[in-house]
Length: 120
Image 1 (tube, rainbow, N blue to C red):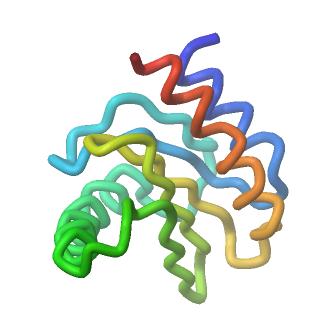
Image 2: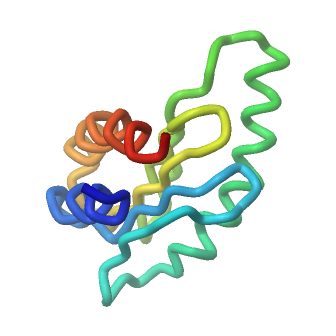
């Protein structure tokens, strides 16, 4: 299985899945799967969130509260779940605002070890 296939499986198994991108804190995407009619520019969203996540990561380190695991950003248009893969990479999973958020979190958490294995 490839990274793209793992991301596709994630997006297609969750109602409302719009896309998923593996990206580094440097804002460089590794791979992605985005549905054709996504109302969001997921690539731009992931790059912008990478900048924010670098700052959150620094804050977590200063607070000495352990490794950051997951962040959610919910708006009127979408629900974005960001899960850390390792100290360099994370996955951004976007759902429509009425998508199955709980199932999305569950599937993303399950998929991260597989992504980590595929990346290393």
